[in-house]
Image 1 (spheres, rainbow, N blue to C red):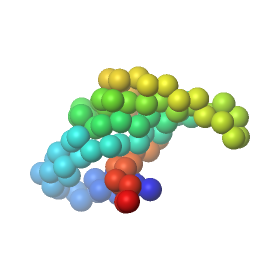
Image 2 (cartoon, rainbow, N blue to C red; image 1 turned 135 degrees about the vertical axis):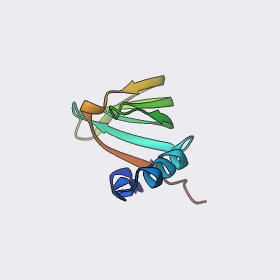
Image 3 (cartoon, rainbow, N blue to C red; image 1 turned 180 degrees about the horizontal axis):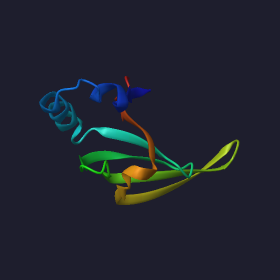
Image 4 (tube, one colour; image 1 turned 135 degrees about the horizontal axis):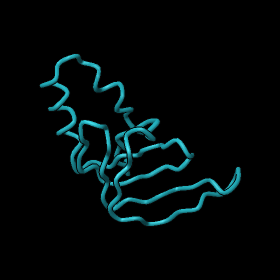
Length: 94
């Protein structure tokens, strides 16, 4: 489970939004993109075109209803125009 980032950037204040985005740096983020793939990795930055950069990223692609293909990517830039949703992943509790 995670926190949807869309809900966190609706303050209307640019300075407050910057602080929120800065708080995401080095947190694990999950990004869903338009072709159905999901990327999970450590958030590094976002630019004014909403392109997101993740490091230590893993790509998940649906093979069928019960199976996902998992591939380690490393560093990845996800174009903002293809991003459907982003989530800050919560650490798993022991």
